Image (cartoon, rainbow, N blue to C red; front, side):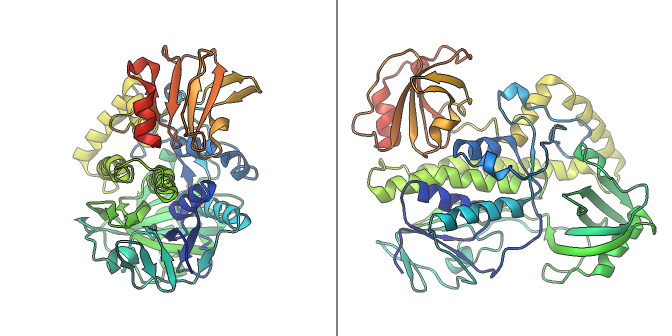
Amino acid sequence: MRTEIIVVGAGPTGLMLAHELTLAGVPVVVLERQHTRTPQSRAGGLQPRTAEVLDLRGLLDPLLADAPSRNTDGGHFAMLPVALDCRPWRTRHPYPVILPQARLEAFLEQRLVERGVPVLRGHEVSAVEQDADGVTVGEIRGSYLVACDGAHSTVRSALGVPFPGRAGRMSAVAVDLTLASRSDTVPTGRGHFSQYPRTAGGYFTILHPLDGDRYRLIYGKLSGDGPGREAPVTSDEVREALYAVYGRETELGELRAASRFSDAVRQVERYREGRVFFAGDAAHIHVPIGGQGVNLGVQDAVNLGWKLAAEVRGWAPAGLLDTYHDERHPVAARVLEHTRAQAVLMNPGQDEEVAAVRTLATELLRLPDTNRYVSGLMSGLDVRYPGLGPRMIDLELTTAAGPTRVSRLMHSGRGLLLSLDGGQRSVGDRSDRVEHIVAKTVEDVEGAEALLIRPDGYIAWSTTDGTPLEPALTRWFG
């Protein structure tokens, strides 16, 4: 089989990347070693920036059509009892979106199937060969390959790419379950995430409701001890944790799905090895706190997708593909740092000195400026790449075709030149990759008369820069 892009891994990162490439008309094949999609919820939500990214492609509303009502409690940092307020970041999605990762995967895969994209399940990658012209995996040949195959990436191993960092120091379990009975200590409704952690009987736990009668339980021993990653999670093991923390009145009903994880922290040194790229957990892993993993991965995909498409279609300017590493590696490195800090502040061992720091951090988080800084950090709304402006605000616009929003003008995955002063500007011969729209807005645009927006939603040029438009168009769109 011949294709342009081979994507290994059908998690959120791989599926979103395949969607981006397909939107750009680039042939792609997705390989996944699992025969069926796991039913486990895993990540429980989307951070605001990822919600914005999905909205840029018109995916958010249909994804949430049958989802529970929006959360309005705000995000958290280290499970401190202060809601993070993202409203100062001028986003239409100021709260984390409650959505199991499994639902996101099912939605994206269905979209790909409808578009005729091969998602080949039961296809385990054991060897990867690359040369000056392409990459070969078994009988499949492509121009490029993107490894989105998780923390234990077989592509990374096959190529001998190091994964430096710190090994895990604790073993924990994530379980989807139902309860046959429950004590008064079991939460029955949704609320701010800080209400869910508990410690007792030598265990730390986080138990919170999912949809219907399902709960998600995360637990581990305060000692850090636990079975290896491959050891199956048994019902007796889960019962022991439930009894220890929630009492004998809390009885396990059905164990729906379970997996083990650790607090390992690692990141590849380069996101590109020749014609192979790394994204999502194949590129970086961290303590699973605050839904950071799925959000990093989806945004890796949206950053890389249009750049790969540009290369395949022959209009990529020199060095465009290298900006993927330059832009995304520092973002993940920052997440690795702050999740390590959060793991300490969570203080499951009830250390008195850490408790004092936690009290101070709580007081600081109640200050508006601190809360804004941390909400931007956790949500991804503060991400800004070198040499670029911030993310584009989803302005309300009036165009010749009627009222619209910036996000609706970017569903095609192309760049957008937005003229807000009524003037006509030229994109040259780039109309196949940059759309020019003349519009008006009553919202604050900080004096900008026109803006050039990359397909991933970041401002590449503005009239406030004091520089000509043409070099920016050439820099990003050839």
